[in-house]
Length: 325
Image (cartoon, rainbow, N blue to C red; front, top):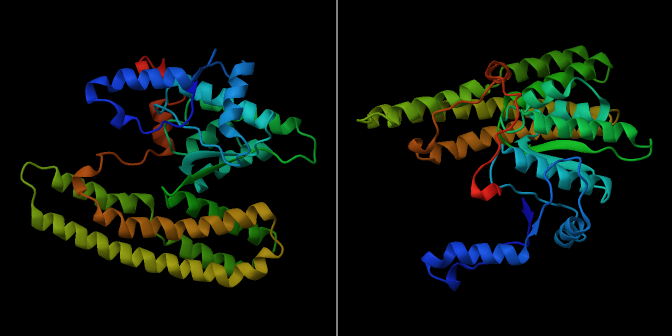
């Protein structure tokens, strides 16, 4: 893995046949080669200088990767993250995963709740359910445990709008907690939980996608059948949107008084998950129906059970392509 300046537009400087060599030379001139991808090997002076040149005074640092799930990529990224956390005092790590699905992970690294393995599986994202990412999560937990009390712990959040099940799970957990502590009345908890339970699930949202893919992928697609599925999907999403809006209005009625007594962390997660429900439904209502059905992969989200059955907690694949060398 190398740290380099952002790639400039060099396509117009040479013909297509010359591009590979031109790109290689451009990278050689600007990149700093990592001496190791082992996470416990501190950055060298030249590596530190390279990272600092790129980061500067930035408050937000994005770290890309040439491939998902490659061992060297995950480990090299951790080397950089350890440096940014330990020496540049970064306090938030953002994963490419659903915000709500990463809440167990955040609770683990901040408070030690649950286990790292279960928290990673809960992200429902295959490229995090591996021993390399597990090692980083445990490192963050140990780093936070060693911090003096006044220091802000490192937190882990997700940034994607991927799931409706995850925010439903988090909101149900928070509602029950607010009821136990007396912040919400039993009637409010019961009513809000009933509205939440009645909302669509991920399985419901993906059901129409699978039907559309199946119909569109046949040798002789039945356009009438496809149109009928799309009409059913549209009606279902309209009903789902109404249900989410009703639930959201009910939460907004109680949250003003509720938030005056709720810890900042719970208030942030509660409001973000409420908004996330709206965003997921809006995405499926507007974007999914516009997509070409053939562009959808013939897969469905992996459940926690699928992860366990597939034995995903193995080491990541060692990348042998030239992109990883």
